[in-house]
Image (cartoon, rainbow, N blue to C red):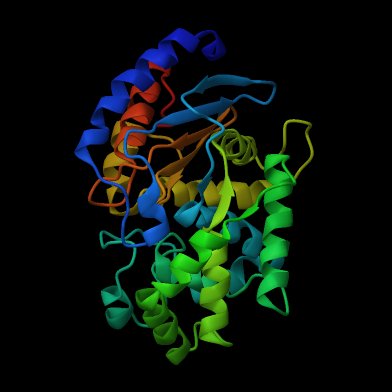
Length: 308
């Protein structure tokens, strides 16, 4: 059983942690620049116990782009595939996650997929709520169900820091509004989006969320939180688009559905087996956790986790 390998995991974390020197902490969002570069933590949940825990798995971090997976699932549950995919496509892109160039060349001008910032903004505009606070609380309630932790909330300092430095996302949102992909007030959307990205949790929470996605939308107690088909769709996007413009290489080297965020977190879902939560804030040039990517590569190779 994989959960007998605590010593093996400790060794893999030790090995992966050496690669933190090859990256740097995100500093374009001032609040994220406070993270310590050499941190690496992981939790792996199999539905019964946290089989593997290494590093400071209780250290808190923000979801950032990992939240895109959760808002996509929620929007699909509330609005259905037809409405969601009228606003956002299903195609991977080799461009950076915050690129605007493809929007200008696409006809119609909708984002290529929900995992880039433009696509995530389009999806976030569909989340239910009359006010920003209602939308945030609605999303948090969903995350509480997925994680089993009703104390999860957003980090106000990070949210404010992101809101004040969100000019590129505002530009993306105004472009989308001009082309009728989104409606409503752009600053309210940016307010919600930055709070969504600033939702704060631990590796243990993230691993439990990954377990739900991995196991056809069901929690460890068997309760369905996400319908089977939506869980399948979300995992597919994680494989094709989840690691920014490194998704293809990641699929070859690791081969599991995963989504990263610029805080250094990675959400992994090994179908019908495990949920994985990783935090390592040292990032490569594409915005992925350097040590987290290495750790997943070591885990996938050692335990044959690839779905391919």
